[in-house]
Length: 189
Image 1 (cartoon, rainbow, N blue to C red):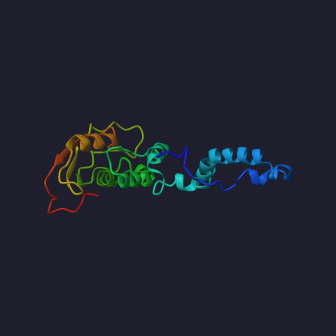
Image 2 (image 1 turned 120 degrees about the horizontal axis):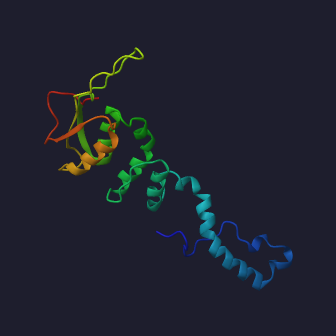
Image 3 (image 1 turned 60 degrees about the horizontal axis):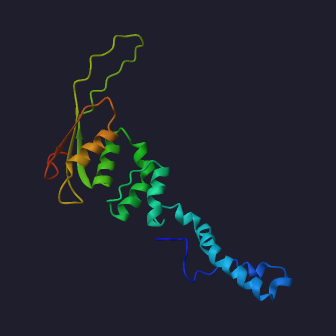
């Protein structure tokens, strides 16, 4: 889509009508300014609709990727337009949950359309007493189980890529792809 030349788009602020009275009846001045109106009409239209350009729910499709880059959102041109818009709208919410179980679950659901369950806590340890010995290295890992929801299959490489990007660096993560949600557990939030 091009906003540079919209055939027949009228100017909301015609220049000829704003000229001094001396030029109001001048045919050349009116034709000249009408040409400028044709060039400036898309600019005025864009400026008049600027709030819509900055709202990913209604922005032109080619602006959604640009808006996603503003907020650090995930945008993939292979996704349907509605998913790209939703990911951009929810980018700040996903950033707030980054590094948490809930954040990873939400990102997996939204971005990849998979159901997920997370087991383990990464064996995080700490001490309330300053100057004590360091605890032993954590041995546990996080297990991320995913199953198809939106699509019939799960792209395991994309799941690995997303889990690596969103899990804390110090944790070891293992991904398991299963065919259906586990029946005996709630989703591990």
